[in-house]
Structure formats: C-alpha cells, structure tokens
Image (tube, rainbow over all chains, first blue to last red; front, side, top):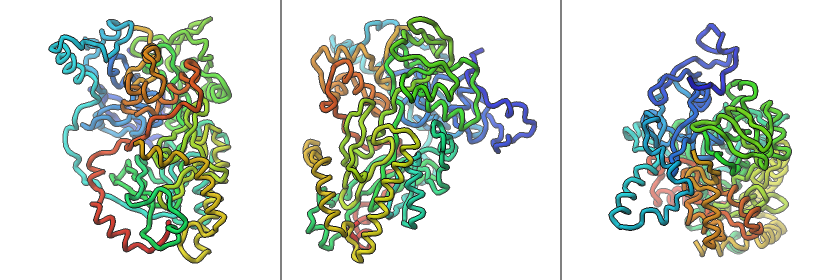
Length: 482
Length: 105
C-alpha cells in the first residue's frame, strides 16, 4: 500500500454529514480505473495526492515517472485525460463526482511497461540527433516507435458537445492577473468607476489561498476566470503612431487580447485603452539529480494547495530546497526542514520521492519542495511588445518610471508586481496601486480633454516618446526579424 | 534509475545534454533550444527557460545582456480549435469597429 503523503484535515474525516462545513460534498472519481475519494470542488491534484496517486505520465525520452510540480498551471507534467479529453492540467481542474481521469503516455499496468528500461539503457544520455540515424531502414523504424512514445495524449473520445461562443468587450482597462498587484489595481478602478475587467486563469478557491501574503487582501468578486492566451494587435494598427496620426480622426486602433474562459465555454476578446499585465512570477526548476520525481513540487504551490483544500501533511514529510528569504519563509510556513541547493547530492526514490540525500545526511520525505527565487511570467507582456531583461532569476519586464512597458496600436500596456522582478506579495500590491493611480489619471485627462484622443497632454506624448526610445528601440527591428 | 538533473522536464533535457550542446559551440538560448528541444514541450519554456538562463549565467558566464528569451508565441494557455473557430470572420469585425464611436483608444 503506497504511503499517503497528504490527508484532508482531520475535521473532515470525522464529519457525519455528507457535506463538510466548507460545503464540499464527499464524492468519488476514478483514476486509471481505481476509485479515488474526493470532495466536490477541491483541486483534482489534492484528490489524487490524498489517494497516493503521484504519477500522471512517463516522460518523452527517458520514460521516467512524472507528476504535478508547479501546482499553479505553468509546468507541463500534471497533464491527465479527463472524461475522454486529453491534456488537461490536473492542477487547474476541480474534482467532480464521477470524473474518469487517466494518466497519459504510460501503460496501465505500469510494471509491465517495457519502455521503462530506456532510462537504464541510456546512462550517458541520448543524443537524438545521432541516434539510429543509419542505416535508413533502422532510422525509419526508430522514428515510428519514437512518435508513439513521445506524443502527449490521444485524440478525444468525442467532439465537444457544446458550441463555444465568442464574447467581445471594449474596456477602459483590462487587468490580467488577480494576484496582489491586480487586486490593488482593481480596487482603484472600482473606486474610479471606469469600465474594466480583471481576469485570472485560477479559480476562486485558488485565489483565496493567501500563501506568503501575510496581509492578504481578498480577490474582488468580479474576477473572471479567463486564461489570456495571446495579445494580438489590430491588423491595421501602426506599431508607432506619429503625433499627426493620433490627432487625425481615424479608425479605432486597439490591441485585441484573446482569452479563453475555463468555465462556461467562451472565447473572449478584449479591446482596451489600457492593459495592466500583472501576471506575477513562477517557481522555476532547480537542476538537481532526480528533480523529476513525482513528489518534487514547487514549495509555494504546495503551500497554496494545502491552504486551499484544508490538507495536512505528515510530520517531516516535506523538505524545502532553496536559500534566501523566499525559501526560508516557505520552509517556515510548511513547517519543513530546509536544505541548501548546493548541499543536495541527489533526490532518492524510483517512481516517487522517498527522500533526499545531502552532503551530511539522508532525509526521508514525501515531497521535495523547490523554493528558488521566482522568475517573472513575462511571455504575455513580451508578446505585446515589451522588452525584458534577465534579473538573475528570470526575465523581468522593463518599464518606465510610471509603469508603461509597451504600446500596441492605440493601447498602452503597463506592468506591475512580480512580473517586473519578484518583489513579494505586499510590495506587489503597493506597486499595483501606484501604477493603477497613473492609469486613472490618464483616463481622467483623456475624458476631461473633451475629445477622445488618448494623449491629451503634449507633455504626456513627449514623456511616452522618450520612454519608447529608451525601452522599445528594438521593437520594430525584432518585428522585421520575425 | 539513472541519476539525472533535468532542466527541461517536458522534453527530458538534462544538465549533461546542456554541457554537450555547449561543447559543440552553442552559446545562445535560441540555439540551445533548437538543438536540445528545451522549451518546445507542453509548457513552452515556462518552467525551464529561467533555469537555462540561470545556468548559462552561472556556469557559462554568459553576461545578462546576451541572454534573450525565446519569442513567445500564442497560445500561452491551452485553447481548443472550437474556441478559435468561434471568432467572427474578419469582415464582420471590420464592420463592428467601423460603427463604434470614433476614439483614439
């Protein structure tokens, strides 16, 4: 019987009523044919971990076990098949009664999977550029086999039954991200009475976990669960409008931001005068021996999962790996031992974490929780035209003193919070408030000026032009190169 | 099980493979991505790009200015073809914005 690394809070287990105090009914789902007890509405990952199901797939090349890692929707290893649809991130799904969940890219009877031998067979690594290239026949056989093994998931059982509608919204302000910075901006926008939307791909339960935010502010009720997947410029929009073009009446030019709603299927597009990118930072991987084992997770993600679903860890079942204030804070909150990455010899365990060896001791544990300095989630802002700069942890968005990081057609794009470099939840909140203040000022100036030009103040134009020169000099060049 | 340190877990790219790529003379993030496949899996580099950059900065002594992230492409989140197919055709979109009040947004 596999050791169970997580349990739900003791309170739940002894409850006599079907529903728990939090209103979550007991239910059952199936994972790889086995019954998994769950609570309606908890994270699917919580249900799986509480049942000792740590593995969701085998990896592409070396066929090693993989399981959920980041627990926040960023990595690629919690993908499971749910109710006949492949490649769903378990960490972004809620457990529901009767769900049929299956692992991917592995044999059902795991012990009989012959491809497990690949890892031992290629001790020195496999260079796929030079592997079985000649003779040609062998190469063709190898490619056929490789295609079978390295794909992710199989086609869905059936076509989607419900048509997916499209909804477009025109806004003064779109706030992408409902973490600390986004929340501060939304509060400001609400007070100002402008037309705005705040979106986040996480659900209300995840947003309610305070994590490391000691003075956590609640997420506003109007957060829409939408995953923004692209920033598209209006096709006809010039990338840098001259002053004359802005003054002359012309067709509205806007950046169109496409999102995908996770609940109530709908494709959303947004056209906004201002977009605030508050997408935060994520926990990237620390390269340590056997860091791919199921049970290796991001420390912050684990903390938020535990808070979100009222989970309890056995004592000494978590070891946090990291140095610096961030790692110390997480080890503290998780009540876990902390080890320095430089002291780690290897992570131990075959199909899941059993322990971790350091230079001077061996610790047994169920979770190795990575706590490296978070790296900004820069992709959306860069896609919209922002510049980024390596900040030691990842790629931070470059912005001017006011918070502007790019312009896309007639839309001004701002950045606030951890996406500009990890600063922590409270500083991110204050940063969001500061940047939002300037956005409100801009909107007020534009409407007071009487005519609808975005840049009513010539001083404004000059300052933005200077900002453009400093931060966006490469924008056009990059466009050409692409 | 063989001890391996992964930088990209989606595509099974290990530290050993990065060393190999470096020994072949590949110095830029984009080159390493193309040779090893790092960053081309389901997460599209969300987990591993930063790790690679940190490694290059520390081990290969690559200065920060030379580190450029790969070009982010849509979609950043999983989205179905059904959803994309629900977008209005381009002429409909043109008509819609032509009738919208004139403003320099």
